[in-house]
Every structure is written in C-alpha cells, then in structure tokens.
Length: 385
Image (cartoon, rainbow, N blue to C red; front, side):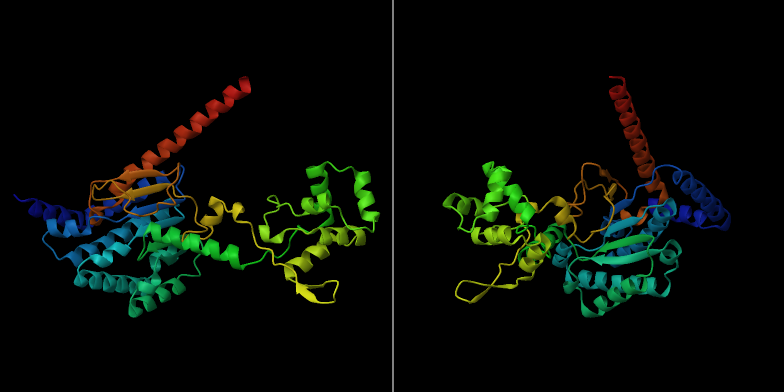
C-alpha cells in the first residue's frame, strides 16, 4: 500500500465530522493550557519546503505554495489564540527573482489572491485584532499586486492588538542596508532642535573641568573687557564629545566671551544657534550661525533598530524553519539575538500545524522557566553572601 494511499485514508478519516469535532476540542484544550504559561511576544517562521512538498506529492509547484498559505492560516490562529503579539513570515526573498519567470509570476499572483481574500474575508485577523504589514522592497512588486498590498494594509490598519509581518520581497542584508542609509540621512540632514553647546552652564563646566579654573578666576573673565588669552582661545576650540554634537559646532572664544559678559540666558542662545539665526560681526555684516547636527558617535544599536522594518516590534523570541534545512538564509539576521531560540524542523511547511508547533512552544516555555529558576537561585546566593 503506497504512502499516498495511506495519506488519503488518513485525511478522509480526519475530515469526518466526529474526528473533526474531537480534534477541534483537543486543539482548544491544548492551546488553552499553553496560554497559561509564558508566551513569546514575537515568533518568526521561515516557510520552507513548498516546492519539495509539491514534488513529493506529484502536484504543481504553485499548488504547493497555495497549500503553504493554508498552513500559515492554521499557524496564525494558534499563535494569536495563545497570546503571541507579533508573527513574522518569510513569504518571498529577493533571491527568488532568480527563479523561473513562470514561478515568480505565479507567486506574485498567489500573493495577490491571498491578500484579496484577507480584504474580503478578514475574520481571522479582525477576530484577534491583527494588522498586516508588508516589509521589503515594495518598489519591486508589480503594480497590480502592490495595489492589493496597500489595500490589505489599509484594511487592517485599525487593528492594534497583534501584527502580521509579511516579508515580501525581503532579505536581511537589504533591510540593514536601508536602516543604515536612513540613519546616515537623519544624522547628516536633520539639525538638532536645541543645543547645549553655547549655554553658560556648559561653558562654566568645561572651563572648570579642562583647565581647573577657579570660580574666582571665572568671575574675573566675566568682568574683564579685554579679549581672551590664547590659552582660553585654544580651550574654547576643543572638541566636545559629551553633548552629542558634531565637531562642526566648535565654540569660538568670541562667542563664549560674549555669552559670559552679557549673561544671556543659555536656553535663548541654544535656540538661536539651532535655528541658524544670523549674527553681526564687527563690520556690520551678517553671517549665519553654524547648524548643529547629531554626533555620529552617539549612534547605538538602538538607533539602527529604530530604522529597521520591524521597528516597534518586541524582540524575537522564537525562530522556526521547516524542511530540515539548518540555516537562516538571510532572514531576521538583525532580529536574532542572544535570547532567540532557533528551531529547525524536518517537516515541509504545508504539513506544519499545531502538532508540529506544540513541541516548539512547550520547549520554549520550559527554557523560560529554567531561566527564571536559575535567576532566582543566583539572587538568593547573592542575598546570602
């Protein structure tokens, strides 16, 4: 008896009303039990194995991808019922454009059909308050598909409880390149709204810290009508790395002397400098004050994170890839961190359901509880010492 024949018998039995009722009851019980433990906030799925599933079952490749979308619907319901807030799926890689044209066109049309179904019959997403976000190079999507993508995102924009991120077309390297490019643009074209470089308290602190100037000497500088000495001029031209401003905003001695002698309010000086107001020199000419930009040395991983496609999403807790391939394939490289648990499963994606996802969730919950126990033991040891 062939495997295909056995598979058909099994599917026939499972689709019978009594078996279907019993399985639904069992699923509800298991999902309810899982929801009582710790729940991951963000889960990513690399939906791999659609083509191999199609070949093994002697069906068309595009039919394998269609069955993969049905598997996604099953998994989404399990995730949202358990309490997962964000689900990210890898639907189409930039590398997939190198596949045969008929397959690429078929995938695009399949995405169009499935997104239209979301628009027309979005009960699942509306039931759990999930919004759709399509992440990637949207400029590479055909116009007719892009129009449906935009309508799907707009149709679910009112949902704020959960998120479904569809990476289409996407690679992590392209995402990180885009984030870095946006960060550079922000830091090179957007001046700071306020600067503390010219404030009186800032100048006072700098003089006292760099040259150990006494308060009495500083007071004499304020009262003295004479221009500053060469040492003070060099001091005022030091670069400041503590106020997160670029070296283009060097404080000149004439500006500092004027600020000290006039006793002007630091906030007003800051606002004037940031706004690029014009100052008059000795000849009556006007010159624009230098614009103050953020210091690139203040760029941190959090800065890059704000420019990623997944900005605002919780950290990635679980990464799942099906089909038995054990690599990330340029997916979620930035989001995978030291706390991400990665699972490589041997089943093909169209076969993926609760019975494959259940062991993943159980193992993740066990690891979280073990981590909590280890932290509690460490805390008790420190308390005893």
